[in-house]
Amino acid sequence: MSAPVVDRAGRARDAAAHERWAEAYALLHARDRHPDEPLTAGDLAALSDAAWWTGHLDESVAARLRAHSAHVAAGDHRGAGAAAWWLHHEYAGLGRPAVAAGWLHRAHHHLDGLPPCPEQSLLAWTDAEEATARGDGPAALAAAARTTRLAEDSGSPDLLALGRQAASDALLARGRRAEGLALLDEAVRAAAAGELSGLCTGRLYALALTRCMEAAELGRAVEWTRAAMEWCATTDGGENPFRGVCRAHRAEVLDLLGQWTAAEEEALRACREAPLDSLEAAAAAYCAAGDVQRRQGRPDEAARSYAHAHDLGRLPQPGLALLRLAQGRPEAAAAGLRLALACQDARHGPLTRARLLAAATEAALATGAVRDAADAAAELDVLAGDVPLLRALADTAAGAVALVAVPGAAPPVLRRALDGWLRLRVPYEAARVRTLLAAADRAAGDQEGARRELAAARDGFERLGAGPDARRAAARLDTLPGG
Image (cartoon, rainbow, N blue to C red):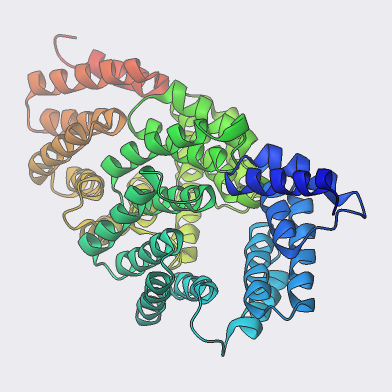
């Protein structure tokens, strides 16, 4: 090679090594167009990474295919196995599971039977994720342990963090909450401390935010979404494929905290930013936007947002059912929730089911099916345990059922629910519980107590911009003696 060619190659490799992806992509792309500057298998892998980070997904896959062929031609089974695993990962993200499965099989073909090596930890990590998804806890824990063992032997911080995340997933799925969250904390701390590559950092933030929300860990979700968005903002050149994914989670957190204007803005930005291999994040963001629009009394916009989420493969429940309730269609709401509960599988965590059960309780009460409502609330009570967010949901549902079935038993349960929501700083749910407490107070003859709760609920709804709820609370307030 001439000196200028060597210089270009060196600059490209340095840019990739230091994750200056826009520069690496420009240099490697330019080199790839010149036959006198052939890219090595390592250069092609770097070009694939750079193309992915800069949003050129088709080029990323094409470069990875060429890298795999180069490794095969050189008889490098470890390199070929790693390239095959990444192709599996990319095709899965692009919604092509059959092709992805073929490349995963190819990765096993290259790596199985070799002496222990770091590349095998990627296969073990995938085994752990797949076992967790199908509900096979023992297999998931065994695969996660294998991931960690291979990672420790390799000395790779990235692989070790992924091993901890896989073990955390397996433990959380088996109900071993404290152990699972402790391991997840370790993995996220490594990401937040800048100890990991950009790809592993982004992947861990995306996975951790999903898991802590599904586990109803609101405190962690608040802290980690902030850290994730700060990391996204530091990316060289401003491009970061993980930004849309992290922003979708931030929208969910802001929604719970009652910051609805910011939540909707973040959700809509996430819909635009989520890359083609992260459409689940865009679907979640559309649901978050729809929830804000529904509660603000914008049903047509909410319906469109839920329809977009459905188009991207997500069942937009319980938001769509609650929209049907607001439209006076409780039977449609109940039917949609029954389907959603039946379709839930091991991939979904307790918060998803808890929200569906809470909405099912509300829909059943609206149809007069008190027994069905009690059954849903009872399942939710068992699911909640002592997790604060889940417990507040369960107490709210139990209090609503008691208000109909045994009115005298409702106030203490609803007081506990209100205390839970206030401690969590979730203002909308707190205001909704106050309306139930007002009904309980009124049934007990405490008109003054009912007035206090309704006034507080109305004020809370107005601060949030929950117009329909605020108007209902004000109307009920006007019916009370002395109104």
